[in-house]
Amino acid sequence: MYLLAIHGSPRKNGNTEIFLNAFISGLDPTFFVEKVRLAELKFTPCLGCEKCEKTGECILKDDFSILAEKIIRADIIVVATPVYFYNHTSLVQAFYERFQVFWVRKNILKKPHPFNKTPLGILLAIGATRGNKLFDSLKRSFRYVLDSIYGIYGGGLFLRGIEKKGEILNFPQYLEEARELARYLKSLL
Image 1 (cartoon, rainbow, N blue to C red):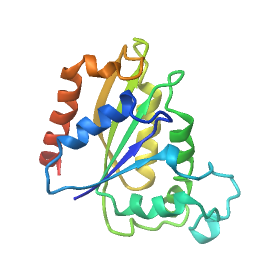
Image 2: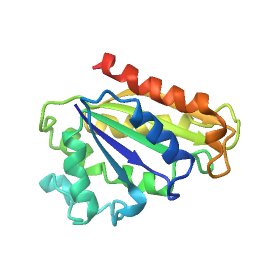
Image 3: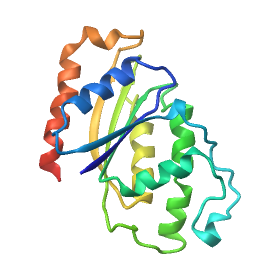
């Protein structure tokens, strides 16, 4: 099983990365895990040029080109993001926008998944506020992104009231919940 873990925070070693690392530490050792920090990549958002509608390929040749290959090979995609203004980070937004090429392949060019997969998507998110709808837009966006690669949403973990760097360490039960979700993951496949 190949699991692609996407770290969507611009902050290194912050709450989101600690949360994601806890999740990864709970995974079955038979999983092949690759963690990618979006902040370390050089890529741009979709330009809306529509060239992919003819070729099924994105004209932009940047770090997302390499990441695209990993995305289509993944059995599981985990996206971890902090919440900024009731949404994911701009890094995650740019990442999601580049899924346009996958959407085109599926919906315009009518191509099947190249490896006949149905990737499972897991979302991990942390927000400082306690609003009832804090995670709604994150879940909705992620579902649409997954659909473009024939994926399905498998749920996730959503934490409220955590803001300061490293504050998640004051809540070891949340880190254990992340490890527990990872342990449960194998039973879903």
